[in-house]
Image 1 (cartoon, rainbow, N blue to C red):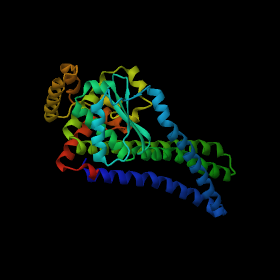
Image 2 (cartoon, rainbow, N blue to C red):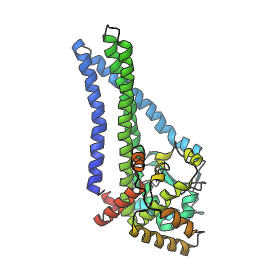
Image 3 (cartoon, rainbow, N blue to C red):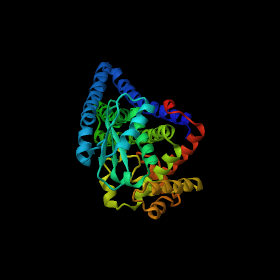
Image 4 (tube, rainbow, N blue to C red):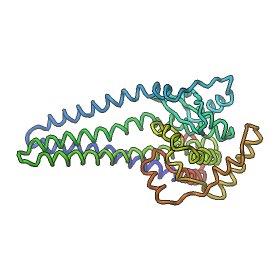
Length: 350
């Protein structure tokens, strides 16, 4: 997916999301207008929107504290990992971020990383110890750049706003249905209420799928920034190692990350449906392992390559799983990085 397609996909997704809300609000006004209740309909829409914003705002404010408590992370000491701070400083300069995200480390063997926070000026990046042990330093820098990309693009705020829409749509349809059913004087009100609830759930589910699609598109966008700010090749090999590590986790351990999967650089659940891209990626992986060995940082090259070099699974189940995932399948992200590498974008373009 090239940059132009990426931006077009994001624009269309926003149009569909907010267009759905406007259309449903218009339906509510249309239903009530003949009875001269249009103003009441507007008040109802504003009340439901305000209620949704209120609860989302609480979640947004409390999220950083809850994530830190849930993962039991600790701040990264500049004396312990000076090279990490140097990498982050360099990436932030390229991203033109005024405020450097605070670095944290999570004592966890899974190779992953995630960004969280409230705004660009109040952001955090967490790296798992498993990622620091599995990737070479160039790949770690690419992963850091991916997370900085999320901060630069304000994805935390954007996805938070988008996540309000399924909730708002659900309550809006319930309100419309309640008004319609009360205006009827027949004996079919019970059946009407059932259809209203079903319709509300379907609409909520539909908009939720759109939000998930938006999340996947934003992952492509963060990958594009990481590739431009560091190296597309390093981002590809990092993704291969991270994504292909998850299939070896037990189902119990996968469940542990279910509630926070949207924060990670790769989706643990989608990882079971992905594998290697092609011969070029194999070559990149071999170079990556050699570099990792030169760094002398406890590499098990055989196991790492065996995990990363499995052929892509082309089952329909994998593509179906992606619909319900916050992240694209890794092979698609790797393909996109190959395409973006040809376009040669600068970090400031992204």
